[in-house]
Image 1 (cartoon, rainbow, N blue to C red):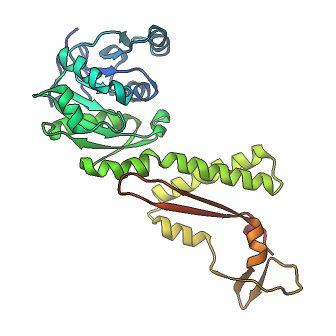
Image 2: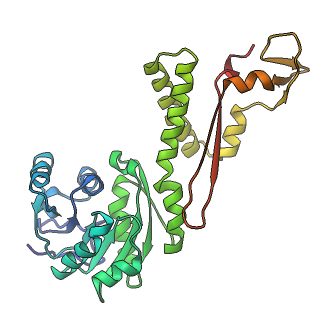
Image 3: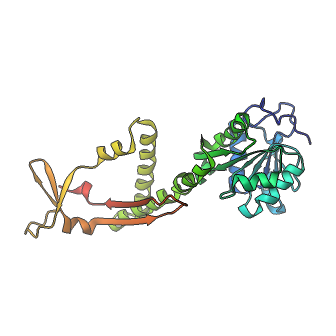
Length: 304
């Protein structure tokens, strides 16, 4: 098999109407499959022009069944290459791809630096490092890419075309990828944790779990759409939902959760603390140490 479209004139990742190999994936795992499936579904590539190099025979059979026409092999060919293997296998995968003739490499392996990638590739190979995230598996990912020393704008556009098939893509410098890893790479886990907290809070307040799950998922989906499409910032949208209030610790005889004084809600601290979930978690990525504290007030909406 030969590749006729290793240059900058290719469409997105390089579809060739003649049906020759235009793109190679080293690794047929979940992320690799998400990327080539997205390319095929979007029409940017045809299954017949993609080669997936996968060492496990069982997995090769699975890929052939799931993606008719896809070329699945245990040996690399000469084609622009996406490296989608485990970090410990990246050096060998890059070396094998370049040894077969690849002159352009995009790595989606977490934590493998451009220096390590270029060392494995040798001279004359344009290398791009990417940090995608798991929503790419459903076509809603966001990724950042950083260029190696020999990656020009045409190579960056090629990488954007591949990752853009499953979501949004931004360009950053390699030092900024540490922040990207903490923000969007790990970010979905924190959103899922918020979802867990909302669901558990709903169940604790008497909702059936399926209803709590439906409400939480719909809330997160709707909030995300508002954030993306409303033209308002996160702080502005949050402020539009929350209401200013004072907390106090009065032991007054009334059993109300809050009282209204001249239109200003005053919420009893002793009461509200019984209806809050406090989730505090820290994550550290090199010099990035954000702390996120979430307070889920499950009773506020029901206050009279």
